[in-house]
Amino acid sequence: MRALKDNELEQASVRLAVAGCAALYVGVVSVLPGSVFASFAPVLAYSVFF
Image: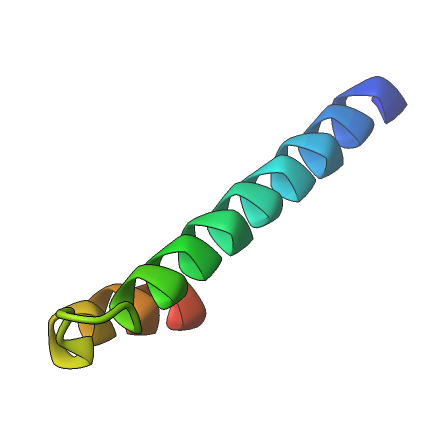
Protein backbone atom coordinates (compact mmCIF):
# COMPACT_ATOMS: atom_id res chain seq x y z
CA MET A 1 0.00 0.00 0.00
CA ARG A 2 2.83 2.37 0.81
CA ALA A 3 4.43 1.90 -2.60
CA LEU A 4 1.15 2.85 -4.29
CA LYS A 5 0.88 6.01 -2.20
CA ASP A 6 4.49 6.94 -2.98
CA ASN A 7 3.85 6.47 -6.71
CA GLU A 8 0.76 8.68 -6.56
CA LEU A 9 2.68 11.41 -4.75
CA GLU A 10 5.51 11.20 -7.27
CA GLN A 11 3.07 11.43 -10.17
CA ALA A 12 1.38 14.45 -8.60
CA SER A 13 4.76 16.12 -8.12
CA VAL A 14 5.68 15.54 -11.76
CA ARG A 15 2.33 16.94 -12.91
CA LEU A 16 2.85 20.07 -10.80
CA ALA A 17 6.36 20.54 -12.19
CA VAL A 18 5.19 20.15 -15.79
CA ALA A 19 2.24 22.49 -15.24
CA GLY A 20 4.56 25.06 -13.67
CA CYS A 21 6.97 24.89 -16.59
CA ALA A 22 4.11 25.21 -19.07
CA ALA A 23 2.68 28.23 -17.23
CA LEU A 24 6.11 29.85 -17.12
CA TYR A 25 6.60 29.25 -20.85
CA VAL A 26 3.20 30.70 -21.73
CA GLY A 27 3.86 33.65 -19.43
CA VAL A 28 7.18 34.42 -21.12
CA VAL A 29 5.77 33.98 -24.62
CA SER A 30 2.81 36.24 -23.82
CA VAL A 31 5.06 39.21 -23.00
CA LEU A 32 7.30 38.92 -26.04
CA PRO A 33 7.12 41.79 -28.52
CA GLY A 34 4.29 41.30 -30.98
CA SER A 35 2.31 39.04 -28.65
CA VAL A 36 -1.05 40.00 -27.22
CA PHE A 37 -1.36 39.01 -23.58
CA ALA A 38 -5.15 38.72 -23.83
CA SER A 39 -4.80 35.75 -26.17
CA PHE A 40 -2.75 33.87 -23.56
CA ALA A 41 -4.77 34.88 -20.49
CA PRO A 42 -7.24 31.94 -20.69
CA VAL A 43 -4.36 29.46 -20.81
CA LEU A 44 -2.72 31.00 -17.75
CA ALA A 45 -6.04 31.13 -15.90
CA TYR A 46 -6.65 27.45 -16.61
CA SER A 47 -3.16 26.58 -15.38
CA VAL A 48 -3.62 28.52 -12.16
CA PHE A 49 -7.16 27.51 -11.25
CA PHE A 50 -7.10 23.86 -12.30
